[in-house]
Image (cartoon, rainbow, N blue to C red):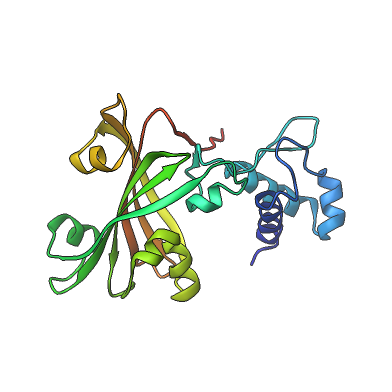
Length: 235
């Protein structure tokens, strides 16, 4: 692993675990050089990556400000995070409910996305997520059963990604995402507390493993008044 990524991962972990508190200053570049024993160029590369991914904000003439992650309200698009990881502060009461889990085969759109053969089948998992007493998210995910041969209610209602990584040893590397806004469909109206809204904010994602195989295709719908999607732009 590159030196700057070692520094990046360590600082990122300290922010995620609240060793470094949100809205406080990160140690100076010179202090980080002494702490890690790497060059200032290495430290600057690590800080740039932290800023791109939304962990810190560089301020001219001052130390970097720690933004941190941890609010379920802010969905950071540069990272693949579960709800529990985003809710590290414990500010929200979150419950995941399995709505359906079954096997499909021959669905044209899914076969095309995965580049699957006719005899391949997929788990279709739909889950709603209740946050502080309101059903604000609805998720439909598809997993190729060649890669994920077994899923059940317990796994689906705790953490599918934790199971995939810790139990199956799969290495998830990146996800391609598209954001859109549309009218809610019948499933979303049934499994979400939309109130006066008939629109949903949708993140459609395709998630990949380190070998390039597609692990998951998913559609995650949010009630539009409750969520902000955050990313960082650099000029």
